[in-house]
Length: 115
Image (cartoon, rainbow, N blue to C red; front, side):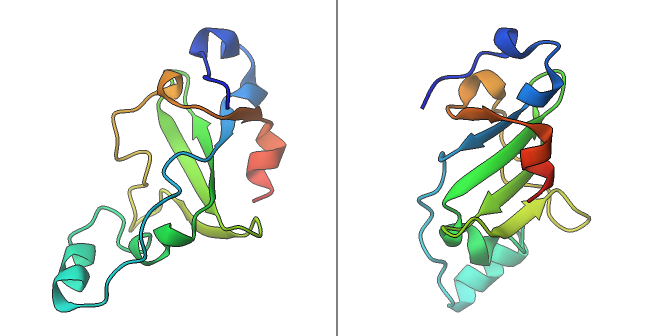
């Protein structure tokens, strides 16, 4: 995967969206008492049970290079998590990463929105 450079993307709206395989190796969550307790305290309680299914992320970035919206897709390309929403802050939004920190390929707004 190519490392992205925000300077290459300035002024190109369709290129503020990427597809990446980063963070697609999450283990299946446990179902014990403490695992459930940790999920309740999570910034993304609805994400936690599904992160192990994510094989690819689609991420939108704002003008400053921060993640804005995200969709986690399974192996068949179906969305399994998407955010942020009223209950889930967002997996990538809950990091201090910016566009320059990501590896992946640029995609169009249309490719992002169709998921």
